[in-house]
Image (cartoon, rainbow, N blue to C red; front, top):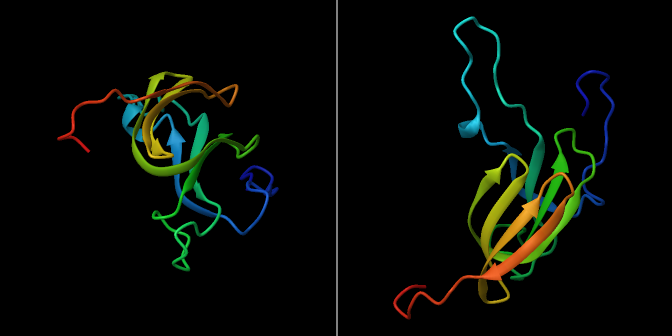
Length: 138
């Protein structure tokens, strides 16, 4: 919903999906605090990162974190929702490399991967597999 004019926009193409997590980017921990004069000197939210379940892939009757997930992104107002990575089994973490580039670590298709995402263009720039760190690490 647009708070200025109360207009409403659909984010996802169907109500049959479930959003497990929505993260504002940049995340709150990366924002500057309110300055001593009382004016806000904060970095504003530029994008939303969504962890979406689109189907019950483990067939337990629930759309939850045990199902395969899709990573999607939109702008701060919810426009331009784009699915970037599908078939995610597990998220290991994410970090902004710079103000417009997100790095995401995850497991998909039985492999641990790292993808670099251009947020303004809503595209995956590169995906690489984790190196083999030894049989004692899972």
